[in-house]
Length: 190
Image (cartoon, rainbow, N blue to C red; front, side, top):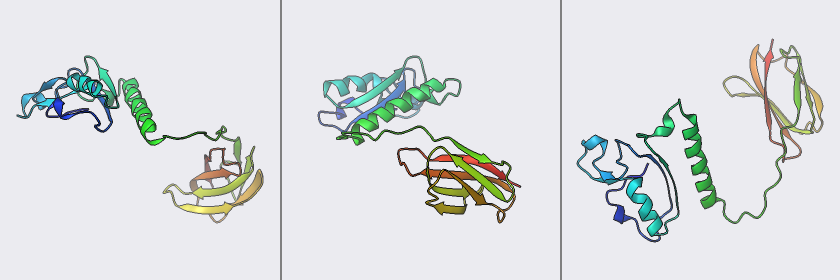
């Protein structure tokens, strides 16, 4: 949501800006006016005025206007697509500023197939993976790591769970091929 006391305070060479606003915003006026439905005696200008200033001064910006919407229309749970619109716009905006000069990207593979059995587990938990496992870790429900093993170096192995308390745990697997995303699975220990 933009809001500036005078739209002429923006000029050539100003910092980039990302904005979203509803056209009937009663907190920060879409054009220029008193904010908070006139309760605050300071004039603020919203996207109705600032968009033209950004364009006239060649200020790098991205904006999305929500016609007929009030303040923060993307927070309405009945319209999640509005949050997606704003989130996507901000992502693209920040990527264009932060991720400059990238000449290549490693290919990211889909998650390897992983199975844990038996589940619920007793004294042993079997892990089967379609890719070579680099690291396995078990976390309890509070996020505390209760088991860790690096370089099992194979696809199939067992984890002794006899010393663990009964309850739900999360198993995180990382793979030798770092292009594979880590996998997290839930397991119950009886």
